[in-house]
Image (cartoon, rainbow, N blue to C red; front, side, top):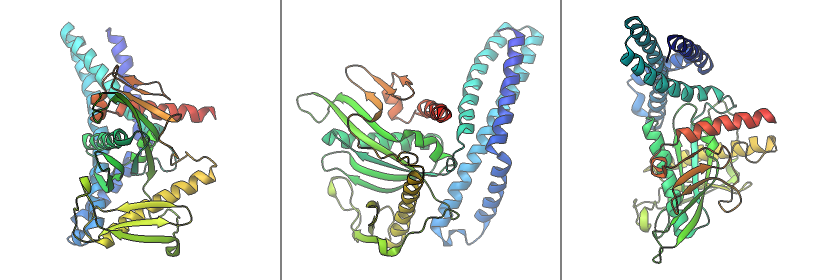
Length: 370
């Protein structure tokens, strides 16, 4: 690559990084980090464990975002120095190495730039993800568990804390449903493009005749509420049931009735939580999820668009948004963006950033046409 091309590419990268810094408002992030740091240093922080967990999780996630930008910005600066030295010495090998690094940096900057497209009202919030098995019997339950692992692995790779509220295990294998939070800035805006029905085609490991099976699972994503959000819930509208937490195969994981199920009678929304040891803590966590879902429903109704914040999906034929095909060939393809990959195993291991980026760009393009 010729020198002038390097110069132009690097100037463009530097301009993009300046735009990203402004849009993400890193100064505001750093200010919040300083405030959270003071809270973490308080000697009585862990007197309230739930609050301490939220504070430390938020601090870790924000610091990770700032570090990500700082590291990438440093790579752009280092690339500029690397190119200058290579050009001065007319070192072909170093120029080739610079070209390879330029490609890697461009890809990383493009991925970070996607974050600037998240400008919706709740896009900067943390996310609550719900996965439900659909048509397909035991294969669908197994698929739902595969999707849960996919999202939690994605979060782990980005060092985002995951808090599991509830898992309802299926009798033979897999899960009927799961509800968990991903505590990271912009988790909602990023993962909201995953809302919809996911379809798996494979040779069923549960069929003794080795037949191909198609199964479905539904993914819903809602934003975590903040204290400033206006959503009131009348206690008289809620039915509270307590039950014993259960594990895989119906085995009890708790000897007391500490798990809590809340039913919002006017809407029929049901949420459960069994991750905490005390009934009081589980009820508080379940209320967080319930309020988030009620807010999502309220906003969707206001916009007269049922899928604006929370996908109302049937998890069956006709409304799938992504196909995962393991037989007779291997491919994962998003039906909205047409992005695809021939490595399903990597996807199920949490490598979904490219799908998320394509979905965010697609959504922005679709919004611009409306």
